[in-house]
Length: 171
Image 1 (cartoon, helix red, strand yellow):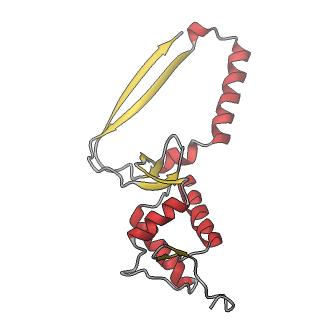
Image 2 (image 1 turned 90 degrees about the horizontal axis):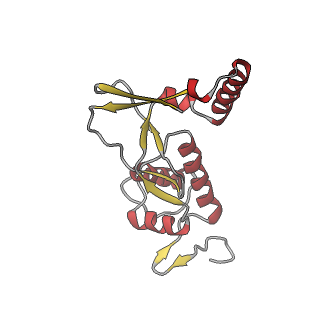
Image 3 (image 1 turned 180 degrees about the vertical axis):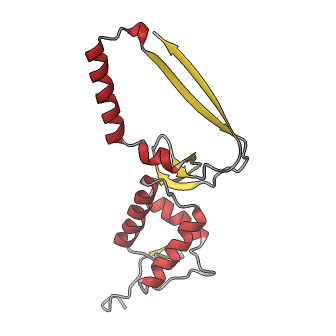
């Protein structure tokens, strides 16, 4: 069985389903979705692993259309950079507008205006707004990269009533 290439590495009583390259593909896909604010829940990822095994004709012990909890636990141990975290709901408009090029452009234009009009610190105000939504639904935890400070997930803005709080100050 070793010469035929059908040999599967064993971890105790468990047989590894995917090789290192295939698990790396799954990790990269998770990271890509996370960067697009579409992180996968544990259940979604277990279904993805099952479908990945089926599509690639990989022998697997998965049942009920998804990988098992034991496999998931082993996957997390083999890939410690992947963790489960609770995301902060983020609207599509905010996710699209808040990216590095947009922020750099904003601060570039701001600096040009400050120097052009010679604004002093007392004439510059800082204003921040926060919205408090009345919906009580908490988004499910998603798989993300370890060490990431803020985890976002696209959510619907239309649900619930929004109360806005604005704070303003200057130097």
